[in-house]
Image (cartoon, rainbow, N blue to C red; front, side):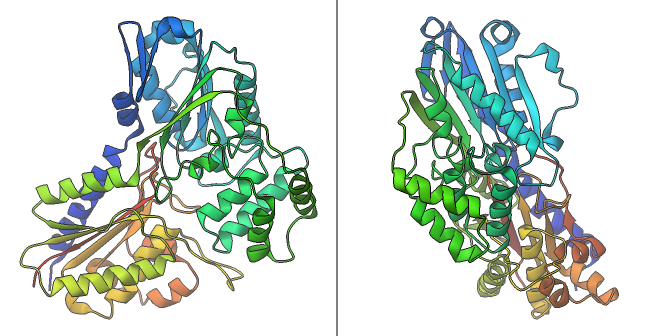
Length: 457
């Protein structure tokens, strides 16, 4: 049987590969690759602007990578340009604020729009989004607007339409998520209830030109879904939004929302944006997985990269990984790395008092449960599952591990993985077994990365 030192060494290899993926989509790094100010020309991704083409640069946005994106932008633009040509406002989670940053010395205000670990709208977010809308609404035609968007932007940029309260919108968002709605379904509903989502920010803009830089946290990178697409003209279908609500909430839909959706269905009209909008993705899960693949190869692993499209229930992904590990493990003559990107869900239907955890912790716990059935595989296997933003559910962990050490510790403590999985209480199981992955905020977000390492017999 593998000794404890060897197990820890293998876990560290998995962590090294995972961190390589996160480093590649570091928000400062991505902005540095895509923003340049040289010879009186401002380069924003694939767009170039002579400095005499525009008056001011207005920077707005929201997301878990917002602080890093702003810091990277400030580094590229330099103090002289920032102090004379730039103003802006970006919403981020409270724990992503840079405590060493002096807001008095920069024109871009970074605003705590929600507390740490609370991935849903808050009044502070509504206030911040109001400021963002005011900036673009008061822009002059000759201004240039730069929008910085990243994962978490939907919750960080709340602007309910006047007919709906934040409380009703929050209820709908929370219940859709809790009952297993996909991110596409969730965002489809949210953009019908918002002033800013579904192209609302672009429609509000009075500048002639808007450039949006996006770090994608959605499978397939659909522009209209990332942060609910504030700069992307999206299909409006109130009847379909209502059908999604009925699918998951049944008779529990707030009356104000039913009335509002019925009213805009009758009106069947939508203002068009007069702003020229250029949307571009600068970071994605696929980019992170490619970096993981290169790091694994440097450590001597063969690699199977399954891509960035893994979704569905978290425990089912774990079962899929263990099946693949069993299948591949019989064939390999050198260590193998299996890579999985995407974003799973955890449905709490039927659980009145669920435990504590997140989708990545649930992947890890479900993998532990499966590994207990296959001791020969457990002796040469390690899994790490983590959110690239450093958050996993309403917890202080990014995810968790599954390996022989956790199985041994759970047996020592007489903890049943199946019992904890039934209660969706992955956090407390992994905490007791020293299996939590804790990174703190990473200032980026491209969904999740799950890595399974297998060694030959």
